Amino acid sequence: MRRLFWIGVGVGLTVVVVRYGRRLYAQYVPADAAAAIDTAAKVRRTARGVLGEFTAGVAEREAELRTALLGDDADLDEIKSKGRAAWAELRGSRGPAAQSRRVPPAWASDQLEDPDDDDGYAFF
Image (cartoon, rainbow, N blue to C red; front, top):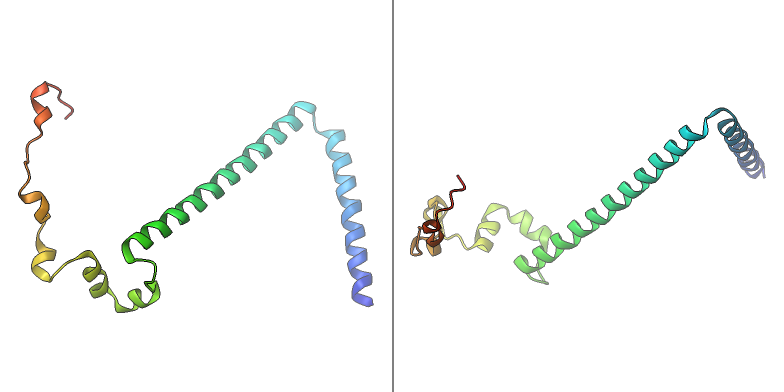
């Protein structure tokens, strides 16, 4: 019962302080400054929303890529515990010789010159 009393006192004081603070804010802050503060608060809320959406999108895409790389039934914690050998196996490396090559084997047989270089455009 005692705790309930003090919770009620806290809630009551909070309501009084918020109302008094809003009255002082409206009384002493110029209208233009209040509008600027409201605009800044809206921008902050919008930025937080955008950041939240971006973070959710990144997490979703990461999950998609992880599923595409490891499959649906792969246990990420087990793969992490195996260490670099497991990741090298997933990437298809077959030993130190495969890791030391700088040019992937699929690129070695392909054409190295750009056919569009003859168009006369220099970008670098």
